[in-house]
Length: 114
Image (cartoon, rainbow, N blue to C red; front, top):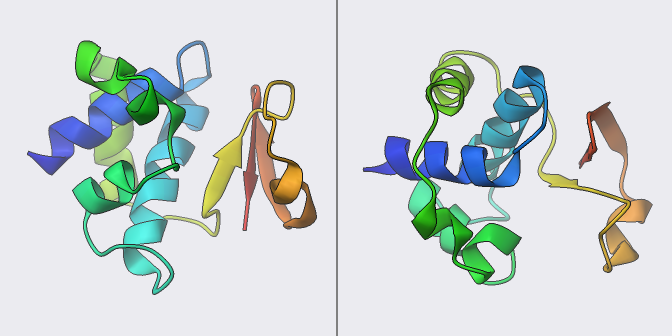
């Protein structure tokens, strides 16, 4: 189920981040589904090659959704998804092309871009 998959992505990508950061991670996926630049389903967006480190390293398959991640996904599904199409941690990211994009917001260790 795509809800469970999105919740597993959120728990995997936003460990240690505040609740608003968890919602924002879910929003990035949902915004990509709406965009013509990305695939049309949550599953396809999440499994698009090279997009999420937790997919590449298999962490997404080993994590169970937390209650907070489920609540964050529910909130994201029921609210405006904002403008961010990307997020990253600038302290550990090695690909710097995202630096060229417009920053939408910074939450915890993640910078959200469009």
